[in-house]
Length: 470
Figure 1 (cartoon, rainbow, N blue to C red):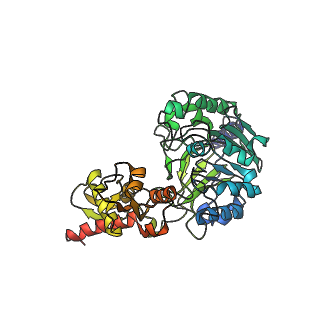
Figure 2 (figure 1 turned 45 degrees about the vertical axis):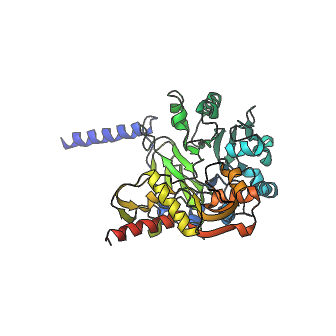
Figure 3 (figure 1 turned 45 degrees about the horizontal axis):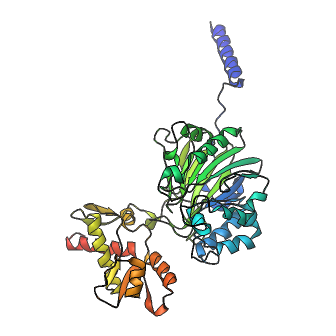
């Protein structure tokens, strides 16, 4: 009896071995390298290769912004293979030294793959909605002469096959401008069909990484695809990139959850929105199994570092997506920390009036030009909520303007009330535009150094004190 049982066990074992040698047997799982124990420099060495993604610099370069200079330095230190751009790399009427940088830096000129977006349309064409007018940005890096790239006849969309370390990165750059607001015009059926046809033409193997990118209007473009188009993207892509909101975040597709491609908005290197720091996306390609370590690198920090789970993800090629908790957030990085308490709801209109008072108090101005982005609910207020009201945390300026200057910029949106000139409180972004537009004398421009979110937090803390809490 025992001999029979032993024989049956041997037969069962042999059957299992034969089955595992067949094509149907799933491959053995390989445990990922414990990257959470590494520094980012060690991750550079561990990876088969790495590459960079950046967007929304609005013409800035290392010459104009320290965050951009750090990014360029860190890209060089990490030996990044190439840089993908997600658009708005130029801005009409601004300095645009980025173009000089591309012309002078041989590595960037050869390894930068820009997107044509609304900023490019406005800079090279009539306006942001001038579809495809931004195509000349591709000429700044001589993309048409690169043998690995095929540019469409429309001049603004292309497909690049980037070979590095035995891998092929398939990059499809699409044109989807902020303007016009009609999605059928901004993100055309022809563009979507080009995407689908290109994806279907890719015979994807173990060493292929597929990336699709478009600047977009609303922050993510997957929802603009038809029921027939979406499954092709979900099946073939590994990384899907969007921009325009200046805010790094991941989008989870409900019916797929943590399978399919990793969808991210790439933030902004010099003009981030909400609590997102100025930064760029760094992607490390690791092997056994092949996977992407995707992190949003804070370029305001003095050193490059691994990120916490809000800014770091792991995407296994052909497998799952997980958040990567490489380090714990610092106290100031905890966006859900409580900053105060409100006894009632405040509407958006009420918060706009409060914002105006904050502006007037800090500047002593006659009028304030500002609109809050949201209201606030009663109860506990978190730091994250403050950024819904002031998504760019602008510095507050005070500009002294004549009546004619006010009318030329604001029409009737700012009341003069029979004054010949007034002192206007305004955010720094709009303030910089007006200073340049009107060639304002320095004596008429006061930069307070005060920023919106910090002042709003002080106001909320004041409400807590009024209630006798804390």
